[in-house]
Length: 270
Image (cartoon, rainbow, N blue to C red; front, side, top):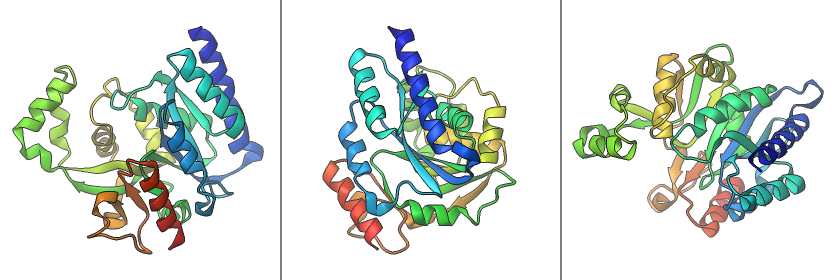
């Protein structure tokens, strides 16, 4: 049965690849929205945002999931893939901080070589692709770069955070955290193709840990330029003090379908 699942999602991925990178197409950004099999309502809510132009000649959006573990997960993903053609299934098991992000960038580069930039997006993040795709036009395509909200890593000053990190990650080495006083927040960040290629060339064997911090750590190793969007990415609970404006690009922590729909509506209306 596991082999059957693998064959099915391999065929599905090939179909998505053929659709998105057909006829020598050269596109700008692939938006990979991280999801899990059971979160189909969030995927449907995002798909409904036709006013946000999630898919056009410049960019495309896919939903990124880990390899299905049960027949139910397999059925959900295969049915959606057949209807929408936007499911990208990774070879790794579903996880949050055990290498899913690294696997996504590695396999997105393999399956979708026609893109110049690859975005990792949380499924509780509303975003406005047109503005983001315009933003990256000014970012280098010849040297490694990462675009996102670059912020101070205040938790490093808290010894309890470090202790908790060791415990949560099975007492594995977490000393690499001390090398990232700042990190690119995981709600949404974009790597150019050069950065992805150099990331993959590292052949990292340790990919566990908070995924945004681990990615930042790798970006430091390859000396990627950081393009900081500052407050253009903000959190839903802070809308009262930091309302959505024409400069806003993404809203994170939309933990309900309603808040996600509202954030998309506001972002794409302005």
